[in-house]
Image (tube, rainbow, N blue to C red; front, side, top):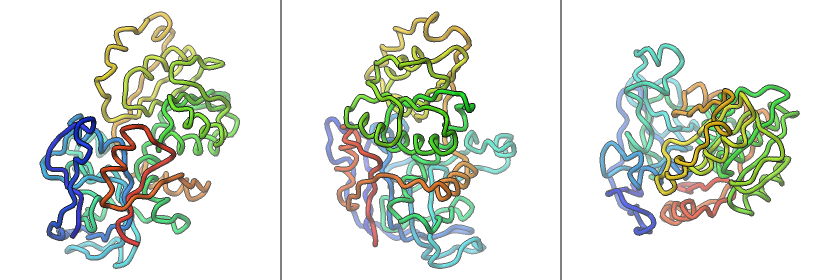
Length: 343
């Protein structure tokens, strides 16, 4: 099969082609696993973190990609949840032990043996992949393959972030960063909390215009001051400055939800400028988002179908995965980026 392989950790600032298109053996499903013929795979900022070593793969070479849509091509012994030809999705959570105290308390995202698709197991930047059948999800018929792919990470992690924001009907919500996840959170918030105004902070004027098109009450630069204090802010950026600025815009008792698997170090000095009285006092909270659970993915897919949420996306051939990643690194973003592997 054809696959885009990551063979070494590198910096996209210096290496514009970190992935190589290669022929590799087709994977074979084990017990209770599915073999998928991949149709689409979303491109996520987490792939940049993997390539540049902030959350490195457990081994190299590795096939990245964790927003996967495909058809069941084969089934290992004991696999019974799906039938051949069924359309399914695969998300960031590839496997959890199912036995530890976290798994037994609906917190499998914190499992010490948590495995991530495209990091700890080969993912969807390829023509085929395997996945445990219990970690695959039926895709609602309402979505095309390209619409469904971003829902499996940007949407699911956005859904978890929104849950952790603890919004009320009289809350004011802020979003800092407005890429694939941010624009889906705005659509969710408008549906679930129609009376809650949403304020968006983004460096790019194009992103700010996009936010206003989707119904944000206000959009400003990352360092701007919100027109009014905010009860919750969801940060989806890869850097530290928006965190510091978000704390300044929180109302007393407000909560900052950081939706990022890692933060880059390029502006880490911004943390030294935190002012305790104005940015942390008065019982302000910081809550991080760690991975997703199967419940998050399943519930979000049903919610997205009911609204319905239709992601904005740009398509790229599998062979142009490096271009999609580089544009993501350069913040050339409008919605999500999706690799087309098969029709």
